[in-house]
Image 1: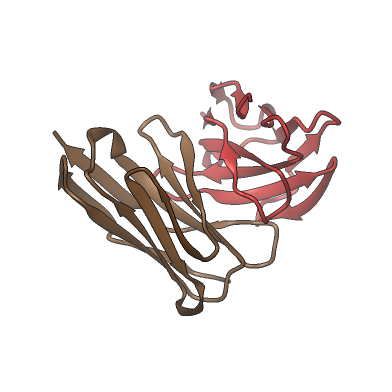
Image 2 (image 1 turned 60 degrees about the vertical axis):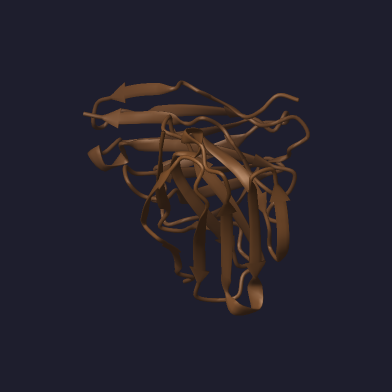
Length: 108
Length: 113
């Protein structure tokens, strides 16, 4: 099955810094989503982005499906950005396969 | 619009018991997917319900079963609980089976002792 790897696994930032999170997948995918899991376990959908680029405030994402990767950009990070970021891919079945996650901690 | 709500938020059960978890989908969504998330790992797909029928299942045994009701809400039932079933159970609703983004509920944290 498809393997989904995220990097870096852990990231510590000072408030105000920018960061780029990467999601690599081993085969062609039809759909891709980015999620933020807050410290209470809630998964928040950030982007549904099977291809192209999207922006929402300080966050933006780019998926290059032909090269099998997606990037999530966080600018001017805030302490509330802390948590785990997951990408999840779908390859024509009913399930999404989640990546290994990037654990982000933003320091005040 | 109302989001996805799950109940209960926390639950402690004894090995061998049965449990039912509930999920109300977001308004306008007709598909519900269930995921299990063990501590420190990413969510794993259990199954999906669309129009009251199961139309996809992950690598989970038959003692994991579910239902979807006409109002698109859903239940996850687990029989003969095992210690390894301890996890966060997440429900996600969407407008369709795969070509739409998910909205997740806040989850039910199940502890089996």
